[in-house]
Image (cartoon, rainbow, N blue to C red; front, side):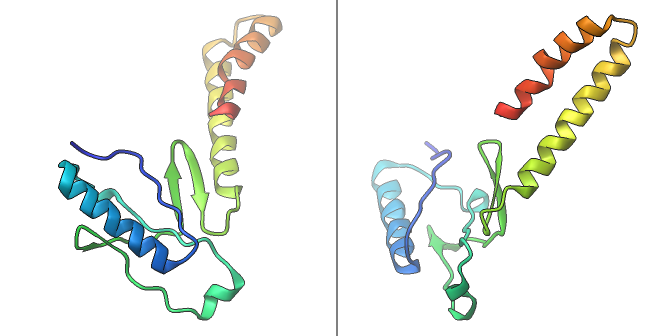
Length: 127
């Protein structure tokens, strides 16, 4: 059995190390495999962290890579907790959807185009 979509959050590197160790032990006991190649570590930025040594984090004996941004459940999370990357991605999606509607339904009335836009493009904001 594989673990899927697991998030661990910890207030310190020591606590995260303990949580990862618990996961490894639990996985061994219950025949659950954590895929280290699909796992990452993100450290949310803080002014105090600039001069602090950040240790390597291990899962099943393998070092987890550190990332500055990660797409989780359709949302881009960044270490500075800024939504600009996600907003930019959504702008591009709605622009592409709008252009596709214009190309495919250019002969439709304005009313039909508005209904199609509301149905197919505006719902993207809730993803």
